[in-house]
Amino acid sequence: MNTSEYISSGILESYALGLCNATEAADVERMCASHPEIKAELEAIQLSLGNYAQAHSVTPPTSVKANIFNQIDELEKGEKIVEEKHQTKIIPISTGTTSNNTYKYFAAASIVLLGLSVIGNIIFYGKWKQANEQVIALNSEKNVLADGLKTNTVKLNNMQQSLAVMSNPDISRVMMKGVEKSPESLAVIYWNKQNKEVYIEVKNLPKLEDGKQYQLWAIVDGKPVDAGMLPLNDTDSTMLKMKDFESAQAFAITIEKAGGSASPTLEQMVVMGATNG
Image (cartoon, rainbow, N blue to C red; front, side, top):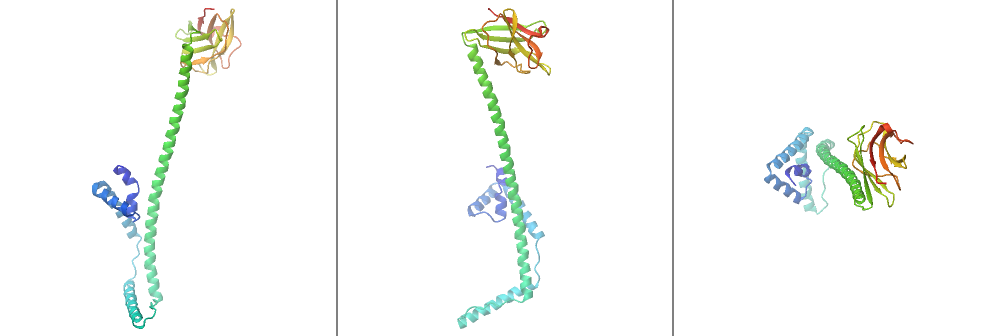
């Protein structure tokens, strides 16, 4: 524990309030001897408590001192009587005025102790609040890490799926290159003619305006057939499962309204690629 952590632990306040056990007190004194900044902090705390006690102190009446000594004298006389007569010691009762003054004195002392207790509670509450805020921050950090782990797990699963598809010897690759409308666009079809599965990997497709979506088409016997919709504005290089096809002469992508169209908008075609059959 460094000096800053030691100072903020609350042990110095406990020492100043007399709440430490012998072991803790010895440790505080050892740390003060070794670290001037800890000693200075303890002195500042003690000074603050002393100032508070002085500000709330009540000066007892001058008659209290005389009354106390009078009671002591009478107690001593009572003890002598007990010794001489072997009787129960009799303690004289103070007059009402003396009793009231004495009670005021002890009441003042009680007020000081109460003030010290309040200060201690304030200090301990501050430490508790600080610890609670640290717990909240740690929980927030944990949630962020958990979300990051979840995202990375999804990406890893997608990569494993992509590698499995691309390494399958039954897979045929169909490059769909950009047409005149979008020459930089590029996508790849991975087609397993054995089980009819079709996957697409988007290499480069421009982001669309709101209300638009990319739609894949398979050209079967010279007619375009809907092969599925690409996720809205998803232009990342991700392997996506599309509709199954047993045969197709080509694949193409067009820009359609969100949700897709029954037939392709040919002037909105962005990529196209022919197959081997």
